[in-house]
Length: 298
DNA sequence: AGCCAGGATCATC
DNA sequence: GATGATCATGGC
Figure 1 (cartoon, rainbow, N blue to C red):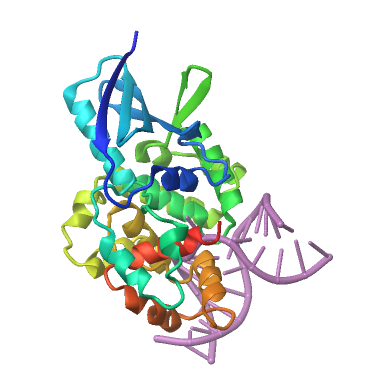
Figure 2 (spheres, protein in one colour; figure 1 turned 30 degrees about the horizontal axis):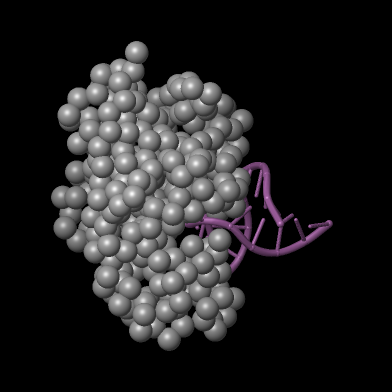
């Protein structure tokens, strides 16, 4: 019989759980968590077994619940850290809002998305794989490909009337069959990327700790881009979504270009110079502007 | 039906 | 260091 243990996180200034849920539940076929009735739930793996995480707002706190056979204090500390990381709770975004407020064109983002935090992908390996999957295909299709991959190679667990999955481990995907991956609608190129990256992670040659050892963003970008399949877009995406880097721009991003075209009188495809021009007013907060521009497409 | 998707690589100039 | 072809398939 499972235990259910709860803890809370105070709601920080300029944080809206509702906005977080709105981003998490954008209508795509997400397979790694559920959003329903104001509750996010997700399967997590621990060294001694699986657990279900549930997060919801209760008055002025975020309520965190972990359902697991045996919940330790360490588990709860880990889960709190995970949620803070996932929803970027430990950040004072007032400086970003100050920059937005005085911007001639984008100031309305403050009220449009008040309290919207940059929702991350805390697991670096998952973030990279997801970025690879999403390269050059529409998001609806990308989510379907991710689902098929997760259902084939991830861990599956039934809780109540729901089927939960975790993202596949690098060890597992490193040995995935190319033929199967082709059947899951991966291109040959992406199969190569996926397997190479999985081997690198399985061998311990890439990790958050390894990236953190580079103190500059440029160092981290370079390290990531040494890996086949990771270009400028993926590297920035990953640093933004998984490493808490605040000055990332997803150069070449189709959605970013669309949003920029909507608000600025740039030609059809804004080049990097044009993008830099727009982002230079948000030094240190480029990732957030990037995220808000994406959100403006919803 | 045809162009575009939250790109990257390799060849070629 | 700039372009162009290629990858692959679904969405709209």
